[in-house]
Length: 99
Length: 339
Image 1 (tube, each protein chain N blue to C red):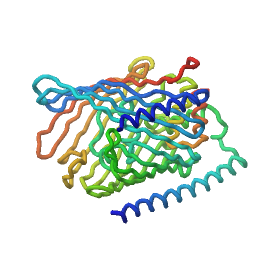
Image 2 (cartoon, rainbow over the protein chains, first blue to last red; image 1 turned 45 degrees about the vertical axis):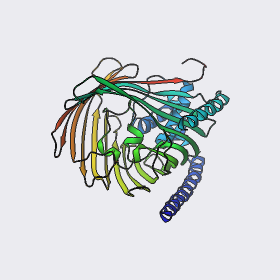
Image 3 (tube, rainbow over the protein chains, first blue to last red; image 1 turned 90 degrees about the vertical axis):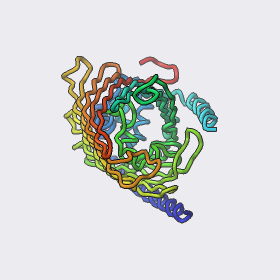
Image 4 (cartoon, rainbow over the protein chains, first blue to last red; image 1 turned 60 degrees about the vertical axis):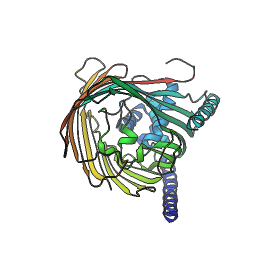
């Protein structure tokens, strides 16, 4: 029993380390990318936010009929966790929902 | 005990949210509905309210919670006798999230067990295109809720593909309203934005009672420019295996202004391997094709109706009729500027 719990903890820790390592590498890479050649997604246009909303949030549900800027911040933060959005995507979708 | 913890937590939450109210307004969202279902000769009704509380704290933290408050009204002897009702209150999640960076969110508390896509993404009453969950959605979710911690995020994210992951550990809890099982698991998915296609795989290891592994794969396809949605899952455990697949096509040209009609179809099958007590799965092999019609009305109201035929091995097949209405709501919890 203890061995299994120990094995489970080791597995979760190893996975966490792996994830953190990759996350850091990607974070550095995306920082460098944004400095050298900004992609279309970093332009911050509403169209990009709309596409991101449709691709990520729209996979499961329709957009809310009306939403105020005050509500949008909490809604998008909630969606960031659910749909595993990046901070950049969160900003673009927020701009789309509450321009 | 559970109620006290909940009350204390809510008070702390509102204190903190008031402090950060200037930039982050907490919201109360969710859905309310009324459902009726007839399976063979048995008819039952379910009034449901499922509030979702979301409280952003600063730029990195978020507290979110969802409850399911449900009445179950049926005849005393199934198909005869006077109607009687029971009330069930379930705390589905109450979690604290920390957005560490674009690739990692750390979650602690009670959360929806991330196995496949149904439990975490589709189970909300205002999202689910059918009234009930597919039978195999019970595989790998350990009752639906987990108490522990979870790491999740997008490992790689670019315009061509997104690789997302979730991994968690849940502890055994017998505290009222916070019941959970000791498990750990992970889910990995690949999403191709241009195709609108996501495929993924899930794993869970149960670390108590009858220890067992559960495996699953999922698929979600929402092509851009087409109001089509296809979703499906296959799952396997010691109890058995099965799948569900559903599709919906939204017809905005019918139904009137700001409305839409959506024909939906779902097929599900479950094959029982071994009887395991409390696994929330059908006791024998089951097959059920279903057809339905969802009518999206203005102001976030949706009507749905569906018919299915349930083929049960070693028993009589039954018709399943379901009708329902759902309303999705969203409003800020603190006073401020109007919309």
